[in-house]
Image (cartoon, rainbow, N blue to C red):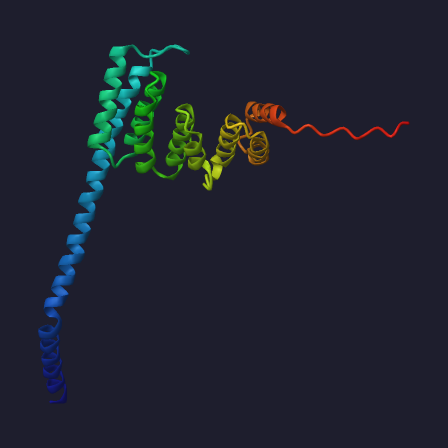
Amino acid sequence: MADHITEEEQIEALKRWWEENGKQTILAIVLVVGGYFGWQTWTDYNAEQASAASLTYQEMLDNFDSLNPGETLTEETQIAVNLLADKLKAEYSGTQYAVYAALTKAKLAVEANDLDAAVSELQWAMDNADEVSAFVARLRLARVEAARGDLDKALQLVQGIDAGEMKSAFEEAKGDFYLEQGNSAAAYTAYQSALAIEATGDNSVRALLELKIGLVQPVEPEEPSTEQ
């Protein structure tokens, strides 16, 4: 009898629990299951976007395959490249391929001496890129601003930035901008810093930095002669 009563009590307890928690339990299950399938759908969508963007980007790169060193694209080919780059930016803006497309458009704009267009593309790339590509875009943007004659803005873009592995390149750019401003002492300090942290192992990079340092190195004053 005790066993029978215990079973009935268990059933009643289960009924009460279900009345109090059943709806919440079902909702939780729905949310978990729905969340899983929603996440799976989102993941599949991102994979499809990345795949489509990759194909478009490769189609854009194909236009450069036939170029020999020093050659530039024909006007017709440049138009095709820019159209594909615009498609990547418009339809696949959330992918890294869109950033690469903007960087490519900026390069073509610089070659065409359209610095305003280059600035626009590099700013877009900097705003939409991952950290590493954003550093690349920022450095190129600083170079273009310097080419436009805005050295103050160029310096603002490279100062106070922890650029990680690109820190040496940022310091070198600072040196170049200071030198253009006529501030040899600041240029010397920046070049010295760039050389000290240069970590690519590229001897040509070190040689260039050493050359720049030599050009702005302060001349030590001669000690006065003690001869009578």
